[in-house]
Length: 82
Image (cartoon, rainbow, N blue to C red; front, side, top):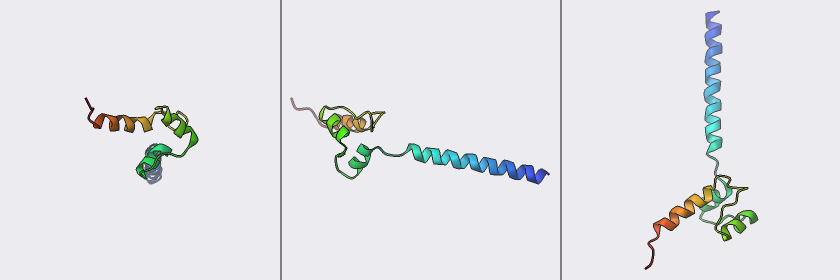
């Protein structure tokens, strides 16, 4: 009986570790704009292109404005001309 309970506990712990790992990998998924940037291109979605022309982030594809975070750091790196 002890072996069975130990086995069930061990299987449960392994299942929890597996699901936590899967959730972490799903959270790392890149947005369409980030994938395009990684390839050295601009995002081709109409909603993203329209938003980027306005200097904004597409809230549908980038709800946390991940694409603008990289653009802001790029602008900060360039020295200003005076």
